[in-house]
Image (tube, rainbow, N blue to C red; front, side, top):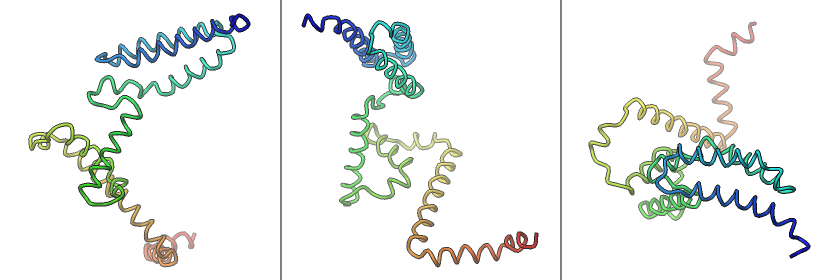
Length: 193
């Protein structure tokens, strides 16, 4: 212990910073702005006093860099009720959705429609498990946003259909595209120039 005594002070300091960051991020019922301010102050102090941890300074730099890279989306769980805080909580929510969907459909695997319509199905599935959705909730929906979402979902579905057509018969798919190009007159105008 005496031979390594000089090494322990930097480890204690760096561990204290990481422990303090975990404590800040673990605060319950605290607005995101308060968490953001406290963590920002801690990261600033870590950057200013990084030389005090010796060889661990590169680890501190990495911790600060990664924390800053997550910064824009790090605090949403503090301002949005019932939003999962950790990856484990989020994975549990997705797993629960897959489980309920498999039970409802009788499928042994997740539905392929979840990939295509996940932006609507997953949100709807998670929302209905939180509370009962009423007609009044649906009546207050933004119709323009709903139509935009429907158009995006249809576009994704159409792209999957096109890929499937190509994989089934590439020659026929390319011949159909060529015929459409010739019928459009686009090719003749390009060739004449």
